[in-house]
Amino acid sequence: MTRPSTEHGPMIPTTPPASSLPDAAPAPPERAALHWYLRLVRHHLGRSPYLDVEGTGGALLAGLARLGPASGLAGSDAEADAMRAGAPGCPVHRSVDELPGPVSALTAVGVLDRMPDAALAGATGPRAWWRALQPGGRALVVADDAEGRGRELSGPRWPAPPVPRGHVRLRELLVDAGFEIVREGSDGLTRGPYGGIPPLLDPRTTPARGQRSSGRLSLAPGSGERAVFVVARPE
Image (cartoon, rainbow, N blue to C red; front, side, top):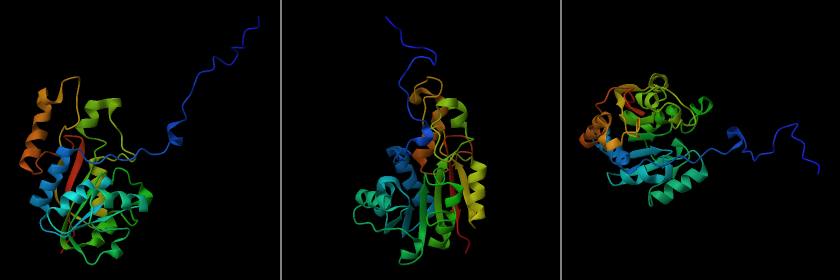
């Protein structure tokens, strides 16, 4: 009986390289984070009208609409449709030029950690946010911190976003777009487990829970999973 050749090793099933796979759809903010973002809006951004940029599934836009008039800004037709489905009755635009007027406050959660450099000056990038805001208007910007404590503790298990950037680089992008930094910090250690300890029993996660309960931004930059900024368009 003739044996199959093993000159080139056994034939085993393979998966295509990651670079050939489509990007996974970004997940909407988990419930506790979403409530915290809305409280940050009330405490640090102020009154409506609000504009949510590239808000996955419309969850944050729907929450903003409960605080006052709110609309969305989408990077694609499919994203616009998903935002409208998640926030019925809220207008979603594809360009800031379609807005009826400048807005008082803007949210950009999970945008800068999936936006390549080539798109930063585009229709949903920081310079467009600056144009959308009225003078003195504020924005809440949240992005995964590629140099934060969360990544340090997670090591290779850290769920890297499509475009990892550290807090310092994220800050530079906002300043380069013309924004003033009003407050900056971190969401704290919110993912876990870190080292096998259940998150609710891990004392390292206590500051993050306290910050969320307060509805404020108080934890130091780099101390958690995400960089958080409150920025303003100068008057």
